[in-house]
Length: 216
Image (cartoon, rainbow, N blue to C red):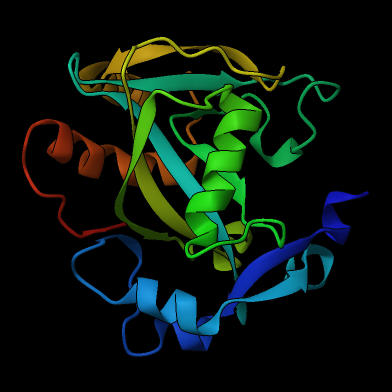
């Protein structure tokens, strides 16, 4: 089945953001987006909403962190189309693992269920971790961001050891926040927009501080 024929979970943009719009990052504690998602989420064929900004496709986006060493799993996606089909992300650096929430993701929290599925498929993670909701990402600066809404989690692992289950990643390792900042600032590296947005909220939490809203 084509990825565009899959049934994914969406929320109408007006239902999700009207009166509570933000651009960038919003901590989970600040707004009631979780309640809006639960009240208004519905399934749609991905191809029907891929270019429709009146609908936000929900994406679970996870930062895999090792709290003891205060490191985050950073990686570069493969530029080989035979290993990774999403051309828009070829060769980009990221520290976010995840993907669309699908109709097969059920239960009291389909977003968390979908993220657990993605962690198993992409990261080979099936146990030895906990999920912590960090907040939300909305980035309307480009056509891709206009049709997606990120539910951002910290995935706290017991060991700083991750072996991705597929060939999507060209390289990856657990890195300190300062090392990730160097990657983000390097003219030789292209970093996913959501990873840029998530970096400082993650840094705050790893240093024992609450994450704060951040506009981009």
